[in-house]
Image (cartoon, rainbow, N blue to C red):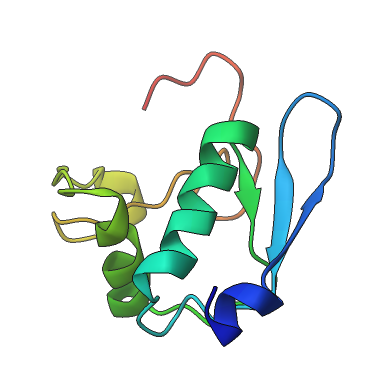
Length: 105
C-alpha cells in the first residue's frame, strides 16, 4: 500500500450507506491504488463524502474521469451553464427561493 493509501481513512456515516473519506486530496491526480480504495468504498457505501476539497470545474472533471467516460449534458437555461460536463442541480430558483414541488423545469 502506498503512503497516500495508508493515510486514507474510510468512516461509515450510516449503517446502510454513505461513508466519509479523509486523508487524500482528490483535486490532484490520484494514484491508481488510492483510487482502487475509493472505488471499493464507493461499491460498498454508494455515497462518499470528501470534505473540504477545493474543486474547480477542471479538477472535478479530472477526478470524475477516474470512474470512466463522462457524459455531456445540455445545460438547463435556468442555471446559465454552458453545455458540457458540469451542471448545477438545485431546488432553488435564480433568486435563491425554493422551487415549488410542482416545478418541472
